Amino acid sequence: MSVNLRNIALFAALAVLYLGTAMIYGWNLTLTIVNMGLISAVMALGVNMQWGYAGLFNIGIMGFVALGGLAVVLVSMPPVGEAWAAGGVRLIFGLLVGAASMVAAVLVWSKLPKGRVRGLALLAVLIVGFTLYSMVFDPAVRAVEAVNPSSTGYLGGLGLPVLLAWPAGGALAAGAAWLIGKTALGLRSDYLAIATLGISEIVLALLKNEDWLARGVKNVTGLPRPVPFEVNLQQNPAFVAWARDWGLDLATTSSIVVKLSYAGLFLVVLLALVWLVETAWRSPWGRMMRAIRDNEVSAAAMGKDVTRRHLQIFVLGSAVCGMAGAMMTTLDGQLTPGTYQPLRYTFLIWVMVVVGGSGNNWGSVLGGFLIWWLWVMVEPIGQNVLSVVTMGLADGSWLKSHLTDAAAHMRLLTMGIILLLVLRFSPRGLIPEK
Image (cartoon, rainbow, N blue to C red; front, side, top):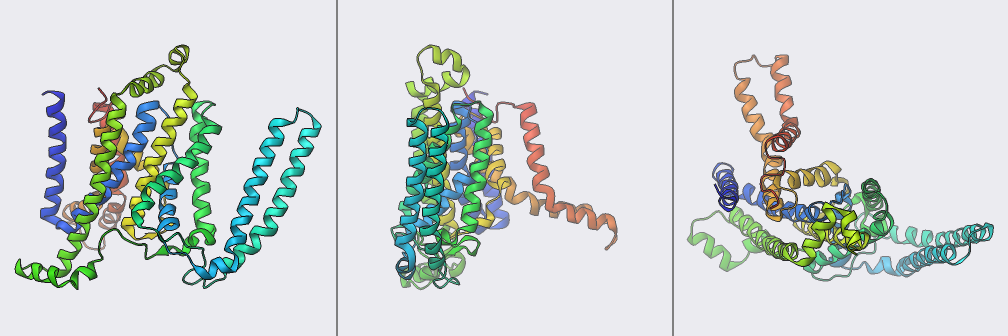
């Protein structure tokens, strides 16, 4: 079988898998899986750009995804006028004072000659800057968070259309990636992994504890949507008449239409990204990135700036992950920092890239859909299988209870088995790089 026919067969098998899910479990659940599969495929594309194009090991994917979710709040939520009046301007001024202090410290360190004077001057700048920052920032935060904390207690956003938050999420994640890359990419590769992991946890800690930014663990709910609400469709006379003419249930049909609308938007983004990264992959820039990935020493000897190119691809891949994070938060309709877990937003994305095929963009898409389907469906399927297996055991027996409880761990076991099988029999992934 040729490579193209094999790839088509893999995607056809994936389509059959989703169609079978729809036939058994219904279109509502299937479309929910499809939407998160589309978002997961976008995340996998971003990681594949970093690892498959340049060999950069990013284990802080969760942080960039969370920054994308934060962008949805900052862009689309309406501003809270009372909070801005209470301390919004002072809070922004405090942040500017803190940023100016850091810039001053960098200038002192870079401009003054080595010696005791430079150390003392740097210490003085940091102490004065931190003191001024605390004097301005802390009272402003307390004033903002005291404004109706049960429902707001934060500054809100810009009140812009939510679709603008998707590129904004990419830009926010790209900015964070640039800061990390400027520090860590000039060092050994393992330092990048440590830096991304640390920054990811810092971002999550900020989201959970800085209530003035996005309400912390109290969550931001009621985010604007780019598609209609189900209740609005159910109150639309034309939609109601159409559903009745076809004999469709109004609630189920409205839910399916909304999910199809989300799927259409996500599919447009995914296909546009695939086209862009495939075009870049086949360009001279893509060949240069592969040359750097395969042999940095030889590429540097040919005059290529390896560190600069690594920074470039790291920022681009992180931007894609940030955009996916914004898409996911838009789909959820709320920002919940407590749900960001490394297992879901770092490990699982890496499994998608490895299983699909590192260095192959279509492999990342395949891995995103396949692994997400397994992540969702393995547990209920495992419960059904174990129910059949334990059918002959007496109710209340320790073995039946133990096996039934083990169904909750089926997804982790399955991920490990799938990863081991792929690495053993197809170490370059289901759709390997050409």
